[in-house]
Length: 136
Image (cartoon, rainbow, N blue to C red):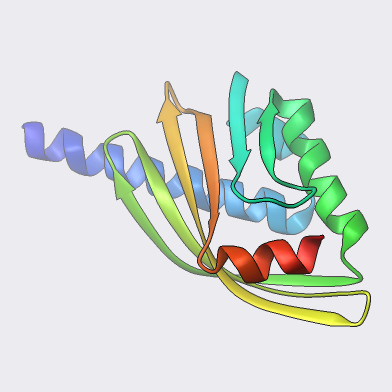
C-alpha cells in the first residue's frame, strides 16, 4: 500500500507541475495564483534586475509580467518533469530576444508542494553568467 500512495503523490506532483507550466506559458495569472500558496516564495537566482525573492502570488505574477515586459520576444518549451514526494523539478528551454541580443538557455525550476499548492520555487539558469548578461 505505501508504494501506491507514493506513486499517487508523484502523479499529483506531475499534474501540478504541468498545470503550472500551462498557466505560465499561457499568461493565465488567475490559474497561476490558484496554484500558489498565499505565502509562496519564488526565487530567481542571479545578479540581474529579475533576481531576488518574490513573496505571495501577486508578486510572482508581477515577476512574470516583468519578464514579458523586458523581452522583445520570448518562447519556452517544456523538456522534462522529475517528481518526488514533496515537489518537482521542471526542465525547460527559453529562447528570447532583447535589445538585439538573443538568449537560448536551459533552466531548472524546483518547486516544493504542500497541501496541493506550491509553497516555494527556485529558478535555476544552467549558465548563470549568460543569463545575467542577457537580462541586465
